[in-house]
Length: 105
Image (cartoon, rainbow, N blue to C red; front, top):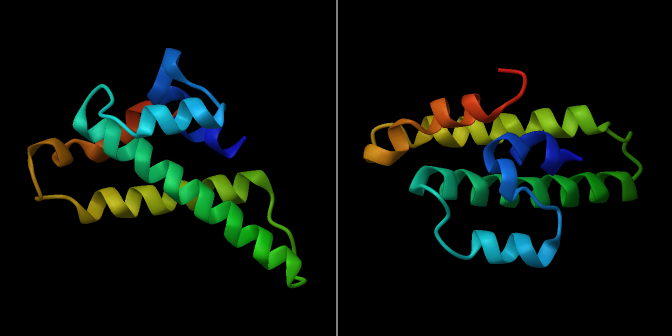
């Protein structure tokens, strides 16, 4: 659900939740360099966040809902894209690309 909320707008017709298809997509260049970077980063951040939440629950912390976890991954992504500003031509439009792919934008 987190993956769908975050990248369905970015991937459009190529959207999938099938693990082997995702690995194939993120293993090669995809559409544009910035979209490739965003897709890879969001995948990494999503996996990390789910792992982190799992560990928190195993250690007795209060569970967070899907919306909270989605906002957390979105925040990680925005901060990463902000940190890349000035690093090259195709990174400059990273936040614009990210905001344009979000249904809430």
